[in-house]
Every structure is written in C-alpha cells, then in structure tokens.
Image 1 (tube, rainbow, N blue to C red):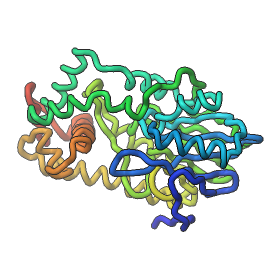
Image 2: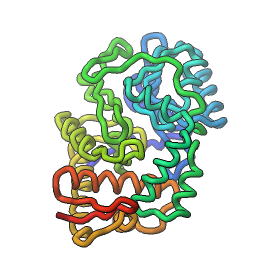
Image 3: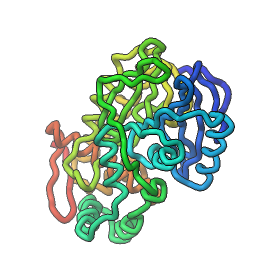
Image 4: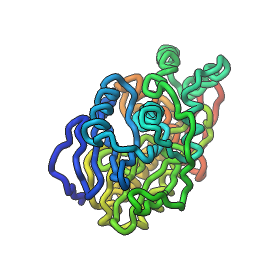
Length: 336
C-alpha cells in the first residue's frame, strides 16, 4: 500500500517544501492531467531546477515570480531535464536565457527534442498517415490526427540551444551532494531519474507515477519498436531500490512504497497482454485492439496515445512469439 508523507496540497506557482532543501513547484499544463511537478533544489548559494514546464504566458508569469520572490534572484546553477516531452522541456531554453544556467539532459533526449521541434517533411507526413491507416483508423480520424502536426512546438517554442550531457550510472553534484543518474527507455528514449542514495530519494520524472501508468508508445518513425520491453526492464531495475524510497514524481503526490507501485505497473501491463492474447484469437485490426483496451470514445489526443500504446503491447507479443501480424494496407493481429 502506498503512503503519502505530505498532506498539504500544493498550489500552482508556489513552491512547497517536501524535504530539507527540496521544493515542489506545481505548474499548469493544458491537458486533462492539468499539472506537472517541477523541483527546486537548494544548490550552495543558488538553486537547481529539475524540469521546466510547458511553455505558456501563464508559465512565464509564474516562473518570473518564483525566480524573483522565492529564489530571491539567487543564481540558478543547473537546469536538469528528465526527458523531451513538452511539459518537461518546454520552458528550458526560456529559463536558460533568463538565468544563464546550463541545461543538463541525456544526449538522446536533447537530440529528440530538436527533432520534435522540426516540421515534418511531406514524405514524413505520408509515412505518419500510413502508420495510422495500417492500424485500422478511418480516413476522418487520420485526417484529424494529421492536422495536429505542430502541436509540440506550442509547448516547446525553442529547443535548448546547448546542453551538458547526463550519463547513465554517473552522478551529478547538487548542493555538494551526489545524485546518481539512472537512464531508462520505454516512456521516452533516454529518460533520466535522479537517486540520492544517502537520503533515499528518487526524482522519478514520468518513469514511475503514483496513480497512472506513463504512456508507452510505438512511434511512426520506429514502427517495429518494442518500448514496452524497455519499460518493463526499467521497472525491474528500479525494484532494486528500497521500498521505503521517497519518490518525487512529475505528476501526483510524493509517495513511499516504490516496489509495490512497480509491481502494480508491471501487473497492469501483463493484464493488458493477457487480454490481447484472448481478444486476438481471431484476427483483429489495430483499431479493434484500441477499442478493446481503451473504449471507443477517446479524444483525438488520447486516440493518438492509444494507437501508440496498443501497438506497443502488440509489438511486445509479436517479439516474444505470442502474436502474428499479417496484411499490408490494414494490419491484422492474431494470437499464435
């Protein structure tokens, strides 16, 4: 059973202490999941920021107030970004320009941010349409999804211009204390978590969340990818940490009970895999799989996420030999 050591509910834009020298900064994001937890860490005579938020005029106003009033215009020593998703990296370059601090990211997340900020070429748009069409989505849905191209740059108007690389297995000093860097794939290609061994703290980003499972998706530019295998492997790696580790997640409440949460996350994915083994006894399209797993009333945004996540589960089953895929124009999936 998870426990939640902090009863106070944070307010948007007002840092709240969660541990000595560590403050949660709740910031708004324009999704159904309406917030992200950013982290302000005391760093000698200044501060280190972990994750930056989704770019918006409101976020600019809130950050200006935090930097002036809470941080008292003290220097920002580092800006650490866990991964390339817009609610995490969106304000990074704005903060770097504002504070002259260096952005720290894994190399693959830095490069992926730059790739995601680019417009798709005509040929990429064609391949992206095929990705949805082969999964069984209708022309109307595909057209609407295609028109969503460019949404990333709303939240990330500018990728970080330069950065310092974070490397898996190494440590970074914050306030003269070592935080061990853990890099994982699955939710994103090189997601960084930070573990303070002495204080038994884990800044988990999106890799482990207390109430929801992070999206695990196959992307159109790597259609044969197996991100679910990567994600499940990451959960096994994290299970070597103590169950009493205090987890500082990007969404939801600070919690204890890491191993229990990892077990629930793993069990949830294996339940979905078993569900698909049963459902695909006769051939099914990807769209039928989406509706089996997530229903048929998804918003456009969630349909995009659901396509990637359904494909991730199917690709996992294909990889281990439990599922076959046939067809070309529209794929059919059948349990072996």
